[in-house]
Length: 431
Image (cartoon, rainbow, N blue to C red; front, side, top):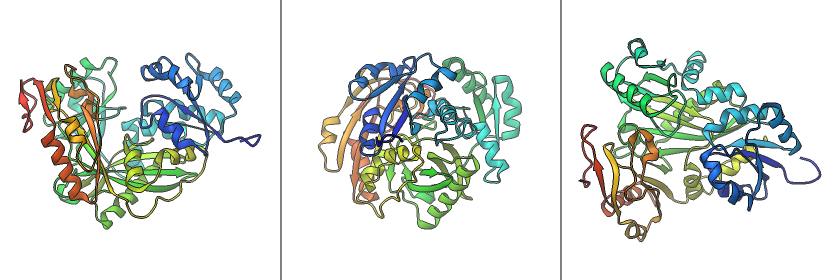
């Protein structure tokens, strides 16, 4: 920082865990934000002109290498970060060139490449998880022989459980991979098959997911854990259906989860930044699902509502090399987000009624909808297939469960469905 001004943090913009408005709000009194915008990205292209009216925008379209670094050096930056999984590697490269605190390029690669991540965690003695790359259907036989069945098939780099599923036979794996490659152009070489981690539903308790996520902030190699986020059960094939803060874990399990998370974060070389670590709750104890080098989607809202802690602000502080403050003790409320998730066989949304009625109930703060009647649906898009999100809070976990049940009763939804991908959900009419 120079000239007595506020520190200046560049945010490499793309679709991710924080919106531009949210970033600007969290930065007040901490830093001035410069959005680095590549108009070739659809998310950026749609909002860049409006963003110019409220924030400082630096257009980096068609810039790369020395030209981009020279431009950023003239901005006199004190920090750089991103809230988008897709921009982690470029942000790490820029941070290294500018000498700013962020993930190293090697750490960013490990955080975005599931095969590399599994190898590093195994070599560090943190966790050995069988995982093999597949470039096409012909590679499946050897990979599955090493990994075993059932297995998880998913992109080597990806987000939101898109193009991810469980496979129970070699024939099913071949069909699924062929389908994914056909629907995801340029995906050859981008998939892995890995050991399926079997959860223990009793750890989190009946009605809750058998996994959690840990939200942490690291500065100068010191990890500070902010929150363990509880989950609702997954929808087929591996889609998330919502989160709750606090989680339902007992203290002994919390300690195990946090120890494992810290070991994984440090093994991957993380020294600065926010991490979102997904952990499976198995009969043999917690196991790492994956480590992500950015803020978890929607988690900042939950932590803010439940505890009054701003994770976006903590991420911006980490970009300046400043350690996160500890989160307040205790919880104001139990905050949740319930994703309105269509069945795997849904292809078109035909009706979504009851939104206003649900929003009028005590404990429901907001019902967002993202899909319109007539819009096509595709389970391959993973968690982002959801129709919307129900935001709410209650005094305890039982209250959260009652509000989720209320949402399921109140929302009236119809779909066009195809045959063959699994049983229909209760309360849904097949058209």
